[in-house]
Image (tube, rainbow, N blue to C red; front, side, top):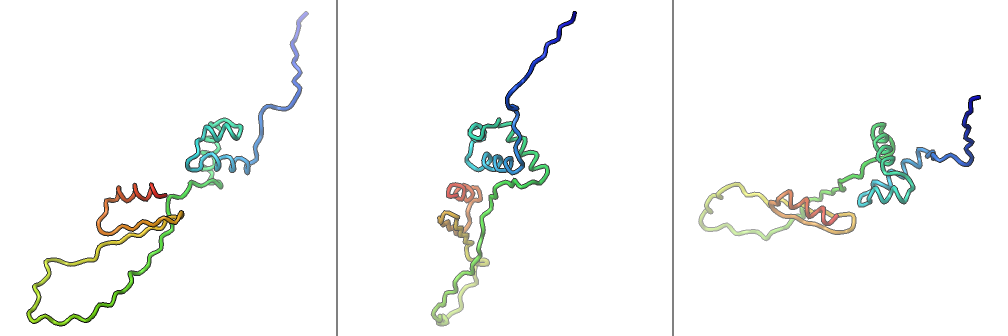
Length: 136
């Protein structure tokens, strides 16, 4: 006579199903700037690899999850005109200038927090990026 083993499982299913809206919300919450994915996954009750998988699938399908923008809105305003008093002609002609004269470049950035950054003249791009990153 052959014996067979039969198991009867009772209770709820262990595997959880998430709606697409829940997945988007969890991925957006876990991948915000400054958030540690492991801590967010623990808080949300899912494994971190699941969050990475969902993010990859959403990026591949062009879904609702977007990377945070690193650009800031820029407004270009004209330089105010300065009226100078009339200059009297010198009695002798002036020597020709040594080279073309240009006004120094001015870059003014207003960050979302209200901080203002004004750079005049030649500035090292790496230094400017570091300053803007520190203020943002």
